[in-house]
Length: 107
Image (cartoon, rainbow, N blue to C red):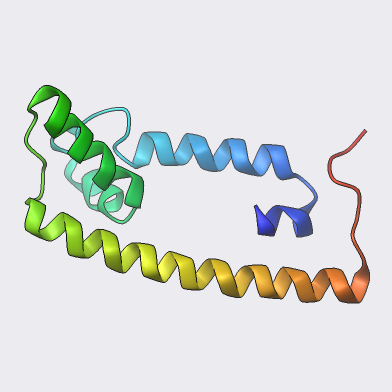
């Protein structure tokens, strides 16, 4: 969302990103049902890990990767995404301080 302030197309950016995450992230289908290449990409999206755990708890569908791998991988991905987010937010704040805040959305 911080990047969308700079681009000026907040809603469209978020909608496209959500669609990509739903399809490529293994949210709509278990990772075991996805093509192998897409499953490897989905592993990098943290939402797929929680979706796999919910499927396991609710329907008994075994996760594509073991639970001992999902937990450390989730923690590493979460920490790295948090660090990237903090850097982006600081950069956007600096940009706003220098050039001012534009109106959100378009009429």
